[in-house]
Amino acid sequence: MESNWVDFKAIKEAVTLGQVLDRYGVKLKRSGKELRGRCPIHQGDGTESFHANTEKNAFHCFSCQAKGNVLDFVAAMEKCSVRDAGLKIQGWFQISGIGEPPAAAQKSPTGSQPAREEAGERGEPNKPLAFRLKGIDHRHPYLAQRGIDPETAEYFGVGFFSGKGSMSGRIVIPIENEAGELVAYAGRSIDGSEPKYKLPAGFKKSQVLYNLARTVEDDSTGTVVVVEGFFDCVKVVQAERACVALMGCSLSRDQEQQLADHFRQVVIMLDGDDAGRRAAVEIAARLAQKVWGVWSRSPGKATRSTRDREDSRIASGPVVGPSGQPETAARFSFGEPASSAAAFRMANGRSIMIPVAPAGLFALCS
Image (cartoon, rainbow, N blue to C red):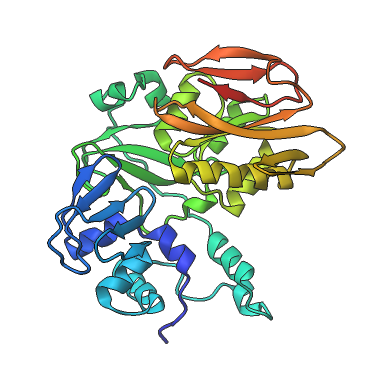
């Protein structure tokens, strides 16, 4: 019997806005980090009223004011409810593993929203791939343009793939789970084609911290830098610092737990846009509640939580990250001033301030 269960969170993780735009045959032009063009929803005359950010899976039409995520887009296009849009997406992309409510959601006596979100976020684990792509070029000029040397590219398995399949003609990025098993390939376009980043349908990125297994194996300091994107992560590791990537600007419960399980110290370095700044503050607060005692200061108020009676503070400010663009860092200091640090010069000329005391945490500065 056909299921009417709709897991909104799993759909948003499995299907990108770029995939849906492709299905509707929407043609847009790139402008910076966005795609722009005539609005496919109200079919207006404005040639750049519709903006789509495929990295954040969000859209906004400045003419008809339609905005939202992939579900909202389909609902607007089909003139249906968000729930019906979810059912349509499930059918179009044949997403496996989300057609039935998870056991936790079925057994929840109250049907509470947190229980549904937890079930949708975790779900079935990503299955290891039974193959590896061959013939990957680790010396492609695009990697040099991003400041990645061939040795680093080979270490990560990153490179240009010219073979057959959905990743053909893209820079491929192998993604491993916590156990070090290959579970997916991401593909980055280098010819302006969309989507800019391609992930396989059904892949649950919320279950994975990119480069976690390699970091845990190679690093013994217990300290890690957290960034948004694949290439930011590669650049930080090339600069000889442990790093993982969220593959976005949100921290899932699985990712939060993995950070708590494997690291004593974390520095958060996200993009400098509004979403990155908001996410850095939110993530810092969540990790503080989960792992450490923290002073959390904001205009007009200060709050404090403690763990093992450690004094610690949290602050945030603009820095320039591995991509060379303004980014936001959340800085933790555990009973040690930020000045008690040694500077490490990154490959792009920026500095990471590394606390001398084991109890300290990274402080980043430009």
